[in-house]
Amino acid sequence: MSDDLARLLEPLRNKIRLLAGRAVVSLLKDVVTVQVKLLDGEPKEVEMFQQYGFRSRPLPGAEGVNLSGNGIRDLTYVFCVDDRRYQLDLLESGEAALYDHLGKHVHLKADGSIVIKADTEVLVDAPFLKCTGQIIDNCNSNSVSMQRMREKYNAHVHHENDAGGNTGGPSEVME
Image 1 (cartoon, one colour):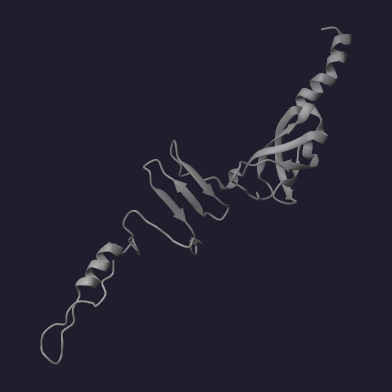
Image 2 (tube, rainbow, N blue to C red):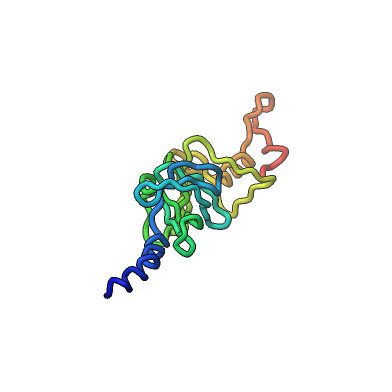
C-alpha cells in the first residue's frame, strides 16, 4: 500500500479501532450513568444500557462492552455489564440465574424447579399468595405438608375429663 493511501486511511482505521472495546466500571453515578475506564485506563462517564425490566448497580471492577457511535468517544455507551468475580458456577446448559456479590440468587433449573437462596428472608409483598401445589415448611427436617397438617387438625379430638370419652373434632375445620 502506498504511503499516501495509508495516510488517508489512518483516520478511518482509528475510528474503527475506537468503535468497540472493553470497559471496566470504576464508579456508579446513578442507575444509568457510570464512570468506566477504557483504553489505557482512560476514564469516561457514559450511559449504561440494561435489559428492559432488569436493573443492577454493578460494583467497581465489573466489566462491560463499550460502543462508540461512529468511532467518536463522546458518543460512547456501555452495555452487557457483568462481573466475573461473582458469577455462579452452578448453571447447567439452558439454565438461568439472577445473583449478587453476596451469594444470594434465584436459580431457574433445567429440571423445571426454581431455587431461591437468601441469607435472612424472602418477602412476598402481595395482598394474596396462591400456591397450586403442596407447601412443606422446614423441608430439611420435616416432610409434613400444610395439607397433612390441616387434615390432622380437623380430625383431632381431646379426652374429656368429666364423661370419660373423647370430645368431637374442632367446631371449625381448617380448609
